[in-house]
Image 1 (cartoon, rainbow over the protein chains, first blue to last red):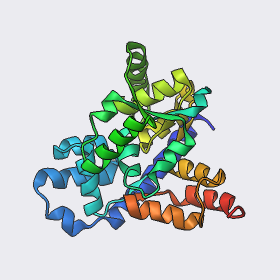
Image 2 (cartoon, helix red, strand yellow):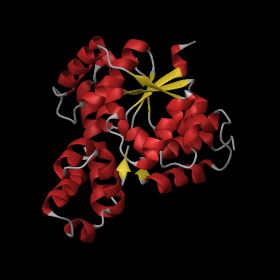
Image 3 (spheres, rainbow over the protein chains, first blue to last red):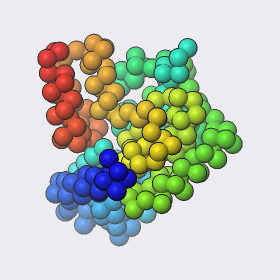
Image 4 (cartoon, rainbow over the protein chains, first blue to last red):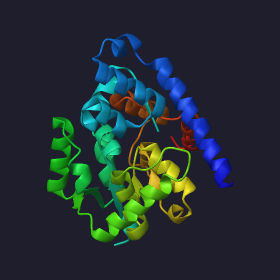
Length: 77
Length: 180
């Protein structure tokens, strides 16, 4: 498989994961959060990048992981 | 001691795995699992800290102190990963991959950026990377765990909030199907 094909494969997998996160998230919970946390959760749903999302929320990774559980956002790897 | 007896784990893996009821399976699969100092610094919750501290005390986990050559390679990997139009590596995961390459340790991660990097970067093609999916599969394959694989994977998802990619899980269940 060429590099281009691998990149395309990962893009498709990322899109699938993004759709699952969007579908399963508890949007009422997300919208009830303060602006920083709300933005971080939405960022995570779109990117799956927990480290950067936790920085946006001003939380450590573990705290943010718990928040994802509360928001019913699955971590798909 | 074969280097295959050793693994190195990143933060995303440890904080999920610590929530699983069968988390000590990890120590039946490897002689020692190293945890980089940078990863220890990211662990905060009582549950995870307690498990890690107890495992360090028993010798099942060991502290890995990053050396300048590891950090240098990790920084190179971070830069290389950013050349591609997909999610790049962060330094903590890159450190684990650098150790995997330099010491032939199995890298344990739940970070997609790390999985992508190993798939895309030629210099990492020899590095063995396992997720919880591969770890649990190996435990079942070796008979270290008993039970219906489908139930065991579902318990992991329930305990941790993790989700296995459907296709990958189906492949594994098909493989394990005849062994239970």
